[in-house]
Image (cartoon, rainbow, N blue to C red; front, side, top):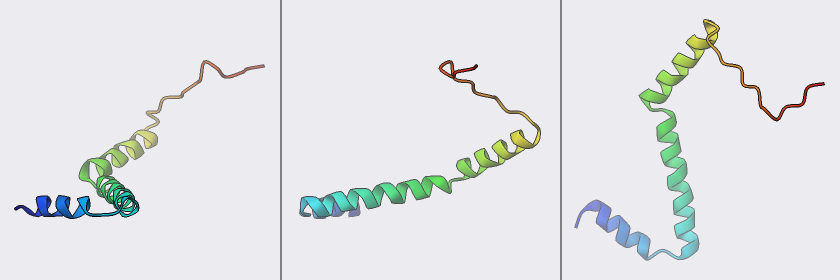
Length: 67
């Protein structure tokens, strides 16, 4: 049995409340991992560079009211 299969079997034994708590923890963990990925860091660098070079787009909602 693989480690993943053992974890899955253990999770199946959890009460619903504990499983929901685990779900929330896992979602937070995965979000934290993605936030620090090299791709994310590079996208921040590109965004800062675009702002410094004034390469920006202005969004104007078609629903905005002008008087």
